[in-house]
Length: 318
Image (tube, helix red, strand yellow):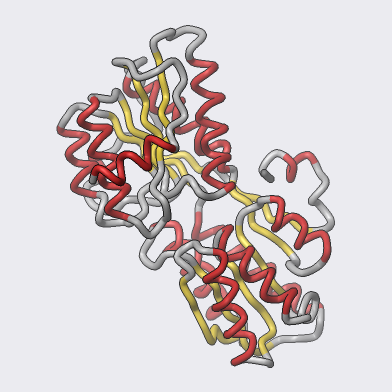
């Protein structure tokens, strides 16, 4: 536990120090552009709110990897022990975080869930802010089918490079993608691999999948590390533009893959909004004592070569 907490503190982003009005933002990992953009949004919201609430502070914390569920639990435990006013949490497991979230509620701490839905009693948290991942997965599948059909391909093999099995966002996103493919096309999902949100693992898994399926027509990379690994594997195999690749999330590497045609589109969430609105909601619920919405859809945008330079795309890319 001590090691986990020390690492979390290394990722802490403090504004004004710890106080009786601390909001703890706890995410799946600090090692990703996506979560760093959540931090930017959380920081900006805190700066705005400090203009009227001087003693407000925000800490931004995350374990070493998205698969280290116990480390995230320890970070939440530590926040409870500090007596924070609110916790904004992106749970790395749909079930494992239930007991500690209930513990926070019982301690009188308001919990706001972001990104991935937590199972169990919904009264354990006051609001859920996230992309509609099922709709986003369906949008990726629809786009892939349209692009393949435009090439005259109406059947064939599609593979999925996912991240952490069982995470709420993954269940909705990949489930939405697969279900839409099955219900609306003659394409077949032949492989689903889990990278644990590690780019090198994703690169190796996609490389092996491409080698085992030379007739593959499509590939879906379901989050930032998985999509980056997918793009790199496709490029290294000399297959850029020869199969339809759809990614998820919007860092600089993925933007370049879209521009050079390695990946045809990326589905980008507003991670900034998750951080900004997460802190604002936490403040409203815990400090301003306002009633907050039970669910807030933070949205997504399919970004491709045609719209990557538009204002709408620039507002969500990072």
